[in-house]
Length: 346
Image (cartoon, rainbow, N blue to C red; front, side, top):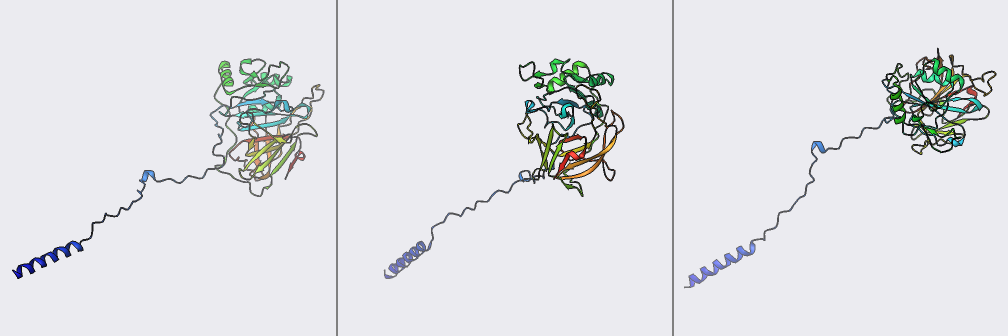
């Protein structure tokens, strides 16, 4: 009996010890892992944007459109289509004021103007690119040359559907506008040739190239005569573009309400004397031959030479080493001045 009692006590002790020694089961720890992206989800490095990457380089397969744009007084402001043009020419007309001719290779907006009358020497540069020529009337010299030279033109005094006026004032000759749609419809109606006969004469750098050994050119002031029109360009080192000024004020574009900005400025010294005996004070332009000028881009200016052999021949612009001027991607202004003495560069 005594042995049975001892045996039962030992068994009880073993059971109790076993129960006390057992630890409660703990939940397994959970480690959250960030899933690795699949190859398709791996972000790719963003390539650095090249200078002027958004600029529409003129395509030689597109026949360009050239438009005469008014620059007489403040009544014309803001002008439309200036910023969308790839190239803009500025030349003296009568009264020591200037007029613009804007060129578009597939970039015409829906408001271009105010469109103004033709002057015969502007035709020389429209022919350089084999461009359609858009104007409202013109001088006797221009009208005769348009007919003689068989210029494909659209005249607001003849092809009225291609234009509209911003105001109801019949005496206001500074409110006439045109558009991409209206010009293209008129070209089709007149059955003008659409294939260009001239190739685009300029080449562009793939990225910004600043002329070596160029003089500093961060503030440019141009006077075309002792009085009358003047313009300026101020270099913005953050954008590497020149912000344009007209008559001392920022030059604003109607379609964007922003200041006109350009990458390239070409200044050519070309005499434009008054025509003897002309009662309206019309001018000629002595642009057949050669002369000196300046190419300005990227905050630098270098001397260049221009040459033109005939009215319809393309003007060449060459550096001092004889190589042609290659443009940076962006808009180009070509300014004709009677003398480089009218140009101040800082």
